[in-house]
Length: 622
Image (cartoon, rainbow, N blue to C red; front, side, top):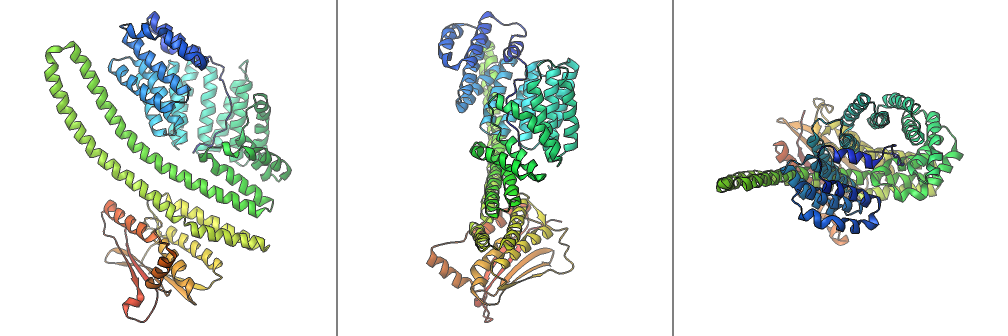
């Protein structure tokens, strides 16, 4: 997840010269050059764009220059992008890209691919964005001297960092740095090293990030206009030093950037919060408070994917000042941001599957169009080619339909996992826990409140970590359950007992099971069973039988019949059992193993006891 510092850097290069080199390299017609010049005027002044475009439209459409016509249509799509009409831009430029590729107009195709990628990036569809950036590079071949190659590669690195592919981003920035050294391109060499340092930092290698940043810092001394470059490297160094817990060095670098922010009227809320955290870490609460106060009004401008870091900083700050109530609020917002980002990650996975399907369909369309262009020149073979295209298309479409069904199944799995994640974070439990903490704070039992908050935060972290994995060790799952039960024992003043039974022959460190299958039933036993009786007890037993792993949750609560009556009276219904059954069925099919779930009212067993017994056959791997 990218935690980037926002600032304005021009790079010292003229965008007009870059695009002139890109588009006018090679032979172009005067009309093509005129369209290019009008494009530049439009991008510099969108207000007068319609009038300039209309002035050349009739001559372009009446010409027999197909490349110029396609470039003109691309310019219209690019203008839509700069006007914020992202969906319209994508729709228009995709049509241009298909025709340009079919006719071998690679420079127009590359420009289309980059603009489509930019539009998808702004829509947060990062996998689609990456797909079109790579397509643009492929169309350029190995023309690394082309500045469009540099711009596309930079965008690829930026997007890979956003989706967490740090190693891939490091590779591409290393390659760009080597290209710049060979071309003696000092400015872009600096930018490549700066981006490489950011990639190292996001990948957790702070030492390499600092070494690379200092190398980039030396380059600046040879440049005449270096103020903006100096600020860029100061920010990178500041972030790397902070992440490496060298707080005083981080403060020195980040405060060097403050005059630039004031000069160019760019408000950087990340920089303010990072400075506050560094000052808190060295014990300077006055400075920390100053930067926190300056950053707070800007919280609403921060993207959701970056809020986790900010709320962690706020929680640590408030806890260091003894304001536990504010620390709790910040921690709750951190949890909400974490859940939203986890959900967003699942959505991106679905988008990735959809994009793969769209790529296949687009390739079919390109192939078909290319075939039609050949048919215009070879009329004699029209019928033969049409029959061949229809035959191939029917095979490809049949294959794509089969693939689409698989994609829908995978998408359904992702949606199911999202439902599970939301159900695991039981809002009643969170509300009750927060109420307990609030009560302790109001009663001035600060030590107990801090202890409870620490356990609560630890449990939330365990649940979130386990929920992101398909399989976790049985040891890790039982550890999370133990943390949950210990928190509930504090909440209910130790009014019930909990016992775990595991035979010695079961190695809980080697057995892998799907996470969060057992916890919902432990929660049901507490909330709907034993909390309503005296001397309540829950027994969790894990045992192996005939090569299969079983889990039994036994309680001496009120039983299923009483629980159902209460639920009907309150008009509520717990979804945890239904969701767990659905998960088990899906896991059984995916892992090709038998699964089973039985929930039994012990009164119905005829042994005179009350309570509920849950017996579950758990899928596992070793």
